[in-house]
Length: 263
Image 1 (tube, rainbow, N blue to C red):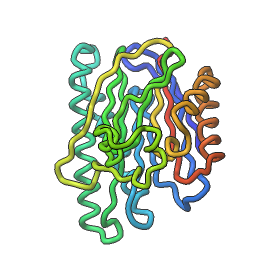
Image 2 (cartoon, rainbow, N blue to C red):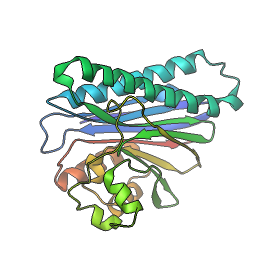
Image 3 (cartoon, rainbow, N blue to C red):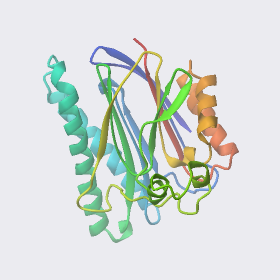
Image 4 (cartoon, rainbow, N blue to C red):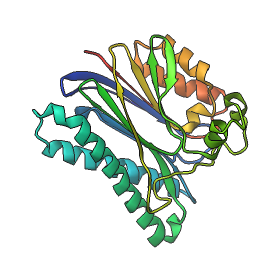
């Protein structure tokens, strides 16, 4: 397990981050990857897929490319122009994911060991009182506010399409045999649609980013309870989420990133 706990000043809003990743109890390798860029108020999480260890390559490539692109853009930006940041940052986030898609796809096409690899991605960037989220695949983001947990991303998966069409309930979906069939992934197609949304942050909010190794093992209420019990200590909350997922079987790699505004 690795835990990071950092604080940052993201355009005059202080943010606290904590992150943890674990291989779980079944997999031999950890194909999840994460990177917290605390100085910029950004975090990236990816869950790779593909042949032997290729998932590790795809997820590691994606988080590094996305984080590097965003940091370079923000370094070059005129920081006092805060009013322009949400719009510019949204564009940069989409561009970063699109760049990662091209690079991962190119590697998959040129290296036989990497054929068929890809990765989910969820990217969070905070600016002023706004949270921008970009994602592809079924890695998720949640908001914990006023003791209530709300999912704020929509899975790009076959199962989510069935839920949206009314063919299956959310409860039934937890036990579906196709719950890991995703419809979008970084590295899987040349033209990739990146979903992006903006959310208003409030004091007291906690935001969770996670791979499906967490959500396949724990249901919504179980995650909410753990956040409630450990809301004052993000590092302890990361450890508790991972430990609980492992107690429920640890069938996949498990990665969580937590962050909250503190001032």
